[in-house]
Length: 248
Image (cartoon, rainbow, N blue to C red; front, side, top):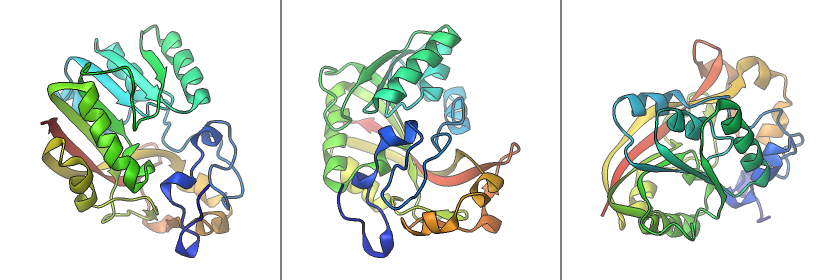
């Protein structure tokens, strides 16, 4: 692990995502793990459902950093050919189980998102549902190039990343700016839009209140329970950028 930043804030490379899926502390200083991965809501992200409804997906789809496959399974159920990649073995094992239980086929592959070896010009759409902000600066540049290499001309990229401007009661050290997105992706991708939307998190106000607040402060996560926004089921909503880009 790299050294944590000023004030205890963690850097993307500090996070052990396999630990997330095993219920262990994913960041040094957090104290305890989580019962569920924060981004796993047991199904697709509502923003992804709406994106599909509006025709945002076509052809062969890459779900990069697929996690437990809530989005990948949803897209496969709607007839898309989907490949889900992740670096966490536990995530892929459970993703396969979820797809099998739903009776759909998704090809799950262990892969480094900054390399994506073996997929040259294969995909027409890429979904990044909260992976980009988990990468360090150099890895973001490599990631953008890898996505370009594995997609066909004219492919579409839909990327969701924590916003640096609208914390909504929860501010993460790994949030990103529009300038960051443009700087790392602009060489290989024609950015058509970057807009705010909501990302649903598995936490509720009650589940966050039960945790030791010092454990969050120790790694630079700022939470204001009173300012948190929630959906109709009480799940916390976090502001993210939705970037839409087309392969150059």
